[in-house]
Length: 182
Image (cartoon, rainbow, N blue to C red):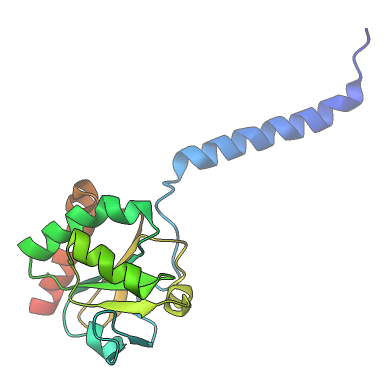
């Protein structure tokens, strides 16, 4: 059996590729997806309120104080996982929490909120996904921290757990609230 030296180059390139990919996956947190909207205003929109279909919501409804905007859906298993934490945040803090009901059926969404309780000041109907596209949403759930001017200051992809709230979102919220108080 003879060894073919011409195979060394492709094998070497393949080996280097495997090493670079392995290092890249280890060094990057998969929840840290870049967003070009950080430090930019929340996208303009005019969409229906889930609970009050005759009322249209706009960016003006999200502005005025530091808030969270949570993209959720009834078809999203992780949305159910994060829901108890969102309820706790809405009960135990003065932080406004707004929902964007993404690519969902309004009847199912209303039933889901009735069954699991509603942590949101209101939810926006994004049944065509237009606002989610403007936000660069990869899927539900995603949560955005807005400053009092309606500017996106932080984005979290995935469920909001007690650890995510305590270690990631709360420090951003407290920093922004401190800036708007002073």
